[in-house]
Amino acid sequence: MPYLCRLTPNPIMTLSKNRIKYIHSLELKKNRDAEGIFLAEGPKLVGELLDSFPCTFLAATPAWRSRNPQALAEEIVEVTEEELARASLLKTPQQVLAIFRKKNATTGKDEIARSLCLALDGVQDPGNLGTIIRLADWFGIRHIFCSPDTADAYSPKAVQATMGSLARVALHTTDLPTLIRSLPHGTPVYGTFLDGENMYQKELTNNGLLIMGNEGRGIRDEVGQLVNQRLYIPAYPQERGGTESLNVGVATAIVCAEFRRQAAKL
Image (cartoon, rainbow, N blue to C red; front, side, top):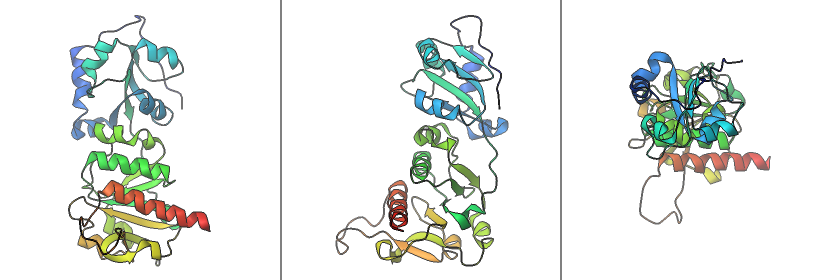
């Protein structure tokens, strides 16, 4: 889909106070949701998202523009690094920031029967969420189902943590118990629990739903009762004491790696 590019006649622009205030307002979810937009910053992140999301506004230094003449947006302005710093939400601005429109993802439920999908039950930290989206991209997981109380994937912190993986992973906000109950009988629904089965001793499938829980309480009881494949990530050595849990991003990486390791052996 082509987008109109309006490059200002002046080579360098000064961003108005209202424009900077508008950009800063996108830190708040209610403002992002009101217009269905989100903010991204940095050459790698913006570069990846430009190929997948409609861009409404892009502000960049002349150096970035000269390296990316093909970049399209509804409005493009060239700014100095000082101007970019005034608008940026980052401590160290990175040459370019852009505002994108969110995409409306399809339900994606049918994919659970065909491929491995993730579900996040109340993951609260935007950094953890962004890391999990990036991990899903790395392990070829194309759909993530989020409970309504999961952090907003389009918050600036989460978007930055994805490192562009938002372009390749579809996100769906849904009631997880309702989703699980609607799946065909026998669909594998995995979850990690302290009383689960050692995942390295269990045969894992190439399809199904893998649920990762909240940083503090794990998977809530209402969801846990619907899990039919309870997994445990063993410590090493298993008999030693110490921490009882892992960061949810780390746990997701370990479990997804084992799913893909087993799949590679088939």
